[in-house]
Length: 411
Image (cartoon, rainbow, N blue to C red; front, side, top):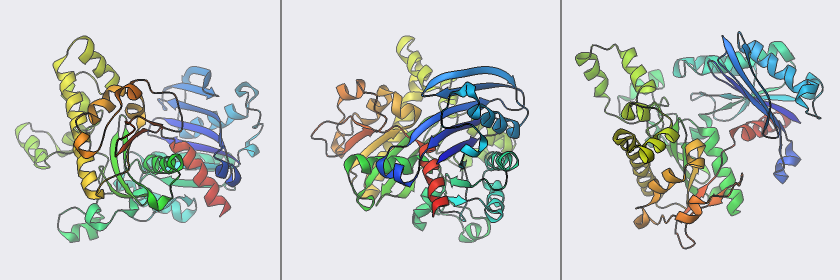
C-alpha cells in the first residue's frame, strides 16, 4: 500500500510517500519512496522534492493555497520527472495519513476520517487555533483532488498522552473550570514519543508493557515524556505547546503572574504577551541572537558570546530538571532517549545534559557520543556499565502515521 503522509502547517505542507502494509510492518521493511516540503504558501513558495534522500527538484514559484500545494505534490509524485517507479497515476496512491495536532479529549487513537471525525477536529480549533485549521485544509484538499472515496486517516499528536492519569493531566485550579472548558494538560509531540518508545523496545527486544524510559524530543519545539508500560505517564507540554522545556522561541515553564505583570508595567495586551512568550522568548529571547541551537553553539565556541552561552545553559538545565523529576516519578528508568533535530545531531547538548547525572545512574560515553554513527534505528551512547542506557533514536513520525493509516483501513 502506498500511503501519502501530509503534515499541513499554516503556510507549509510537508509530505512523505511510504510503501507499507501489515506484512511489511511485521518485517520492519517499510520503504520511503519520496518526501518534500512546500514553504511560504500564499506567496512565492519554496518547493523541495527528494527521492532516496536526494534533491530532484528545488524551485520557487507562487502557490496560492493548501489545495494547490497538495495538487502540486500529487502531480509531481505521479510524473515521470519524479522517477518513482511505483507511482504512475493518482490511483497508485492508496491512502492518505494526516498529522492532526489536537484531538482534545475526544480522540485517543488514530481515526479513519469521517464527517463525525471532521466535526470533532473542528471542535478542537479553540485548543489549537493555528494548527487544526491548517490540518483541516489538508484533509479538504485531498477530498477535492482525489475524491471522497480516498481513505484518509487522522493521527493526533495528543492521542499518545491520553493515557496520562488525572493527577498528571489536571491543573490545580477550580475543578469546574476543567469540566466547563476542558482546561487540562494534553501534551504534544505524541507521535514522536510513541515512535521512540516503539523503536526502543524493538532495539532492546522488550514487550510494550516492559518499557520504562524518558523520551526527549528536542528541536525548535521541545518536550520530555515519561513512558511507563510503553504509554505516556507524564509529559512536559501542557494545554498548549508553551509549557515545559525551553524551546527555540517559546519560554517553557514560567510564573503565570508574569502575564499580568507585563500587561501592567509594559502596557502589553494579553495577546501581545502571548506572542512574546511563544515567538520571541526561549533561546531567541535569552540570546537576543537566534532560536537556532546550531548558531548559538557556534557563537559560544567561536566568539564567546555570553548570552548565547547563557541560553544554552538554561536550555540544558531545564532538561536536566525534567529528567530528575521523571526518574522520581518512574522510580528509575531503563533509558534516556534523545530525538529531534537537536537531540539527534548535537553531541554538545547531549553531553551537557548528561554529564553530572552519574549519581542518577546516567553515564554517558563521551567518545561514543562525539563519534555517533549514522544509524536510522538508534545508537547507544552510554558506558557499558551505565545503569540507565542513553540512546539516540532518530524519530520518524511520518512512518508511524503511514502505519496507523494502514491499520485503521485494514481493521
